[in-house]
Length: 161
Image 1 (cartoon, helix red, strand yellow):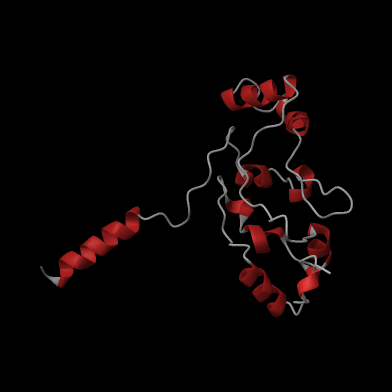
Image 2 (tube, rainbow, N blue to C red):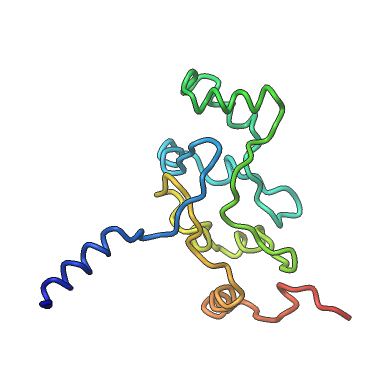
């Protein structure tokens, strides 16, 4: 076989190989790209209750603030409406979750000027989300070093006595 065949095969395989991991299937289609284009900011939907350690997923009634009129009658909005009527949260498939043994404060990071995209990727450009960063210890420590933030173990982990 000649080199040209392998070049073509390689190109064909590259075009069928996804550029990113598969986005989890969500119960309702949701496009961050569309919502950001309408002028919404992360904090408009994702609240950060005191003390600011976590950012929440939107409460279902919050979605209906706009969608009681926008998109009414569409199947996805009807499904959203059913969750509200049943007083059930939308069972979103989580994309990012911090392990329970890690101490993490969204507020601390946002107050330090870290942008949501730093950890979550270019969400504003996505119709579907997938895990874009590993959020591993090595990844976080590398970021802390780059930003000259503390790498003291106790800043992210509760130390045992």
